[in-house]
Image (cartoon, rainbow, N blue to C red):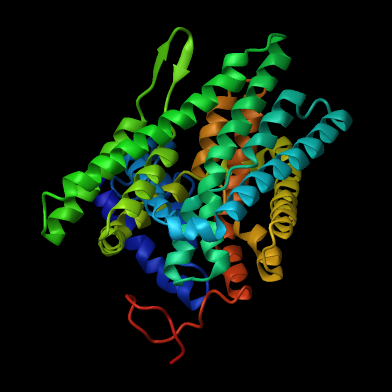
Length: 422
């Protein structure tokens, strides 16, 4: 009973606050995050009224299955952007930009935090500096996708953006695994080649293989049904299945085997959309079904934002450096890589800003990094950055897409159609 009441409060509260956000010309996703923050342990949740908010972060964690499922559908939707026609047009650009912007961001944050260590060795260790540099590469696809969908953004930069945020997950995984392996070696004095080089490659390969198999089977299962509602139900069931399977972990011969939820579901969507002739119509129906799920995802994400990190002077210092240089890295990396691949000047100037949002993937990396001697500091810095980027990132993404001319002026139109002038 309490859970159902709480979920209804989250859903209705987030939607009501989105009306205020529209009046203030802010993206709806920002309203959902703020609604979660208000319902979290630092605001309404502190009243400890059953069903009205979250009294602790543990209560939010109990609903993490909703967030996992939402991420699966977000990744499945982004995978739908990897159509062969589109890949032929800008596949090379997306790969180069996706890799270079992540690497440049990591290098810039590494350099800045190592310099901070030299001047203030009591604040941050070299191991943590290197780890944070790798975490900086990660971009959250969820907020970006929600802004694109809300404003019906369309154009060369939007198409490239969705491809880049998808590639970014694989690149970030490799960078983090390598950097964390080096950081662990610095603290222990022993280098584990398996952890640094082998396990991330295995995770990527297994994720892509599982996703491809799921997409292939989904297509053939869909052939048994002709009803739109039944095909929709099968698609939803398969995304849930891939989310569940991606959580499986095991160890063989000292080597850890696991999957990336985002990569698995992206690959499922990619293969399915390229072999299924009715995938576009079906994806439109899936998008309608997932709308309330995404609202809950962002409200729960807002409830997880920890305002307690604002009371830590060390977290504010390291976090300030991290946020400034990550932002510079994303913008510079995107600008240079876009220039190298012949993107238009419009894309060069605005793409980097849209890559700033950071959330779930970074928090997962921070959780792993807690095994370092000052891993708690790494976690606090990431919590601070997520707080800033999740609240500010969607608005910056919207403004960048507007500046690039890929969001049309809003008019009094149906929500099912592209916004046009009245």
